[in-house]
Length: 112
Length: 112
DNA sequence: ACTTTGTGGGATATATATGATACAAGAAAA
DNA sequence: TTTTCTTGTATCATATATATCCCACAAAGT
Image (cartoon, rainbow over all chains, first blue to last red; front, side, top):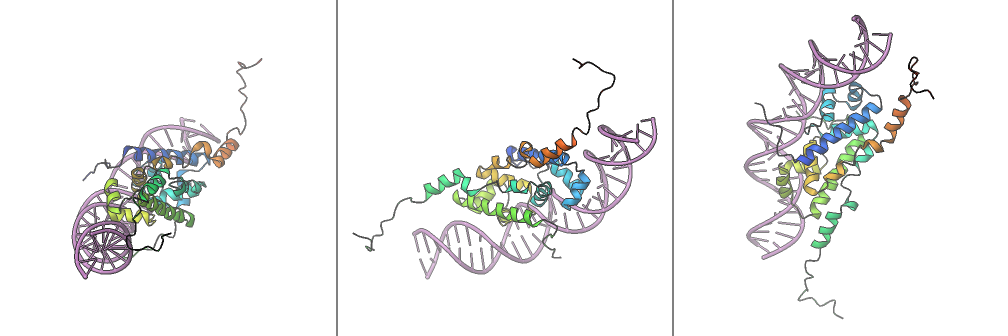
């Protein structure tokens, strides 16, 4: 049975994956690596590398990370979702912290 | 049959994937999302999200990109493997480009 | 105390990724 | 032109990801 290409994947996500595949291809060609060469260094088949470069959303993170590693771009991956730069997350965290300071009714240890 | 954890994946790549999973978990908690909530928004099962956050290298790029999309961090992905910042690739490209400028013997359009 | 909630792990069934191979189209070089 | 190399595509077999259930445990709230 032929299944559709997974319409649940957000368009932006799919586009980002395609873009990454194209960039990996560019980086590979710049290094004068054939797909066969690079695939063997990644310990994957040439077809799998082809799917990665063509933006197939189904390829695993292992394949993706291996490609960046072979290209010497693995550090780029650590620029993603850096907690210190997650402005939205930090904002919501602050919002959530002191809903209201519960005046501990019984305890009066802190009176002054 | 129980299969080993894929020793072919470079250590750095595996570590990067683990780190990304941990970061996604942090970002999720900052947004007060339960795994079930976030998984449903990603259109994946809770278990798949669990594998992503625990650094399973086998999860697909679709799951990874969906997670970043739900968290509003999808733009981070486009910072990876940017051709303009690929210093190594640019260097090798320059090395390879002008092996020798073939002096077009016959044409003399450019004389001055 | 109880209840709810969040998370992890197992088992099974299904969908899909992956590998191996072969073949062909296209590009580049001789 | 030929030859070689690179890449795309197709098929088949196998491995694995994924969904869906279940249960267990821990933490936090009532």
